[in-house]
Amino acid sequence: MSKSKIERLFDQGEFVVSCEIGPPKSTDAEVIREYARMLKNHVDAANLTDCQTAIVRISSIASAWHCLEEGLEPIIQMTCRDRNRIAMQSDLLGAYSMGIRNILCLSGDHQKFGNHPTAKNVHDLDSMQLVNMVKRMKDEEEFCCGEKFKNHAPKDFFVGAVANPFADPFEWRVARLEKKIAAGARFIQTQCIFDTDRFVKFMDMVKERGLHKKCKIMAGVTPIKALGAAKYMKNNVAGITVPDELITRLEAANKAGGKDAVREEGIQICIEQIKMFKEIEGVAGVHIMAIAWEELVPRLVEESGLYPRPALKE
Image (cartoon, rainbow, N blue to C red; front, side, top):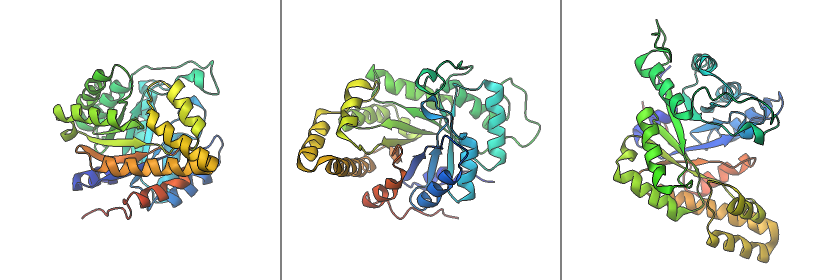
C-alpha cells in the first residue's frame, strides 16, 4: 500500500481537513462506523483517540480498522502513558499491516484524570522519543533497539505530533515544535485555538525559523457549546487561553437567546476561525475537535468553504 491520503494531499498543496472521533466506552463499534459514514465525504482523515482523558475505550487501532472498513482514512493516536517500547512497536506493526499509515504521537493525559486513577503509568518513552522511534522504523528500517528489519519495514508511516502555542513560557513553544520536527514529525496538530492573536504570533515565530517548510501545521479548532464551558476553560484549564472578547460575545448571545443562541454563536466563531486560519501563511490545514459533537463537523466544513474536499491526483 502507498502513502497515506493526507500525506499525498499535502504533497498536492491542498488545505487538509481532519477531525476527531472519540471511541465509545463499550464494544459498540457501530458508534465509530456511523461517524465514519457521516464524516468520510467532509474530512480527509479522522483521529481516533487513544483512551482520551485516561478513560478506557475501544483502542485507537481497532477503531481505525472500523473507519477503514467504512472508507474513512484514520489517524491513530498513540500515547506513551500505557505502553513500553516493545508494546508500542508491536502495535505499530499491527496497525501498519492493516493498512493504517497515519500516527499521531502523544504523551497522554495523566491517569489520575481518568476512570482508573490508581493505575500505574508507563512513560518508557516520551512523545518526542516516540516520534523518533517511528521515524527510525520507517526511514532507517530498524527497531528501537537497533535491530534491522529483515523485510517489510513500515516505510510509509506518516508521523505526526502535537503542539500547544498557549502553554507557558510562550517563547519556548516554537523551540519545542522545532525539536519535534527534528525528531521526525511530518505533520503537527495544535491545541484548540481560541486566542487567535497569540496563534498569529506563534506562526510568525514558526515562519522566522522556516519550520512551516519542514512540516505541515494544522490549526486546531473547537466549537464552544456553552458559556459555562468557555468560562471554565478560561479560568481553570492550563494551556488554553480564552480571550475576554470571546466571552463577551457568548454572554451577549446568552442574554439575547439563551443556550441555543450561545451554541450558534460558538459555531459562528469556529467558522470565522477556520476561514481566518486558511489565509495564514504556513497553516496547511485545520483539525476540528468537536468533542462529542461530531455531527456538527459537516456543517462546519461546508460553511467554512472547505466542501467538497479535493480528490487525489493520479
